[in-house]
Length: 117
Image (tube, rainbow, N blue to C red):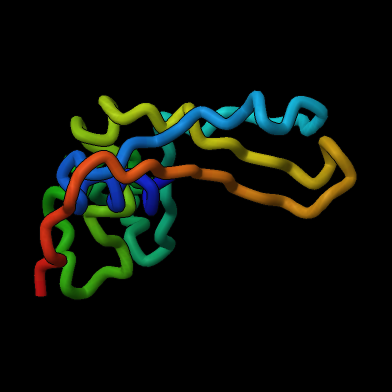
């Protein structure tokens, strides 16, 4: 979900997500997450009340990003809250006796800006 959210951020509305759940009627799917957490054991500090879990970009206050594996694009923010990430699909191996998959289908709706260097 974080990768899909970042693609949508970086392309400034040039792509939209499509709901393709009806294309796979026999496949058990779960909708993509709107919120997620990431963990970095290097940021556990009981004295400062940090347990190593990060939920939102605001949780990074006081963290030196240059010395961390955590990037802002990995976390939820106001922009990702508004994105229809539930249109993506999570396929779990134990639901259908398959491999695990994450499905996101994009539709290009306009030209997109060149990537930032």
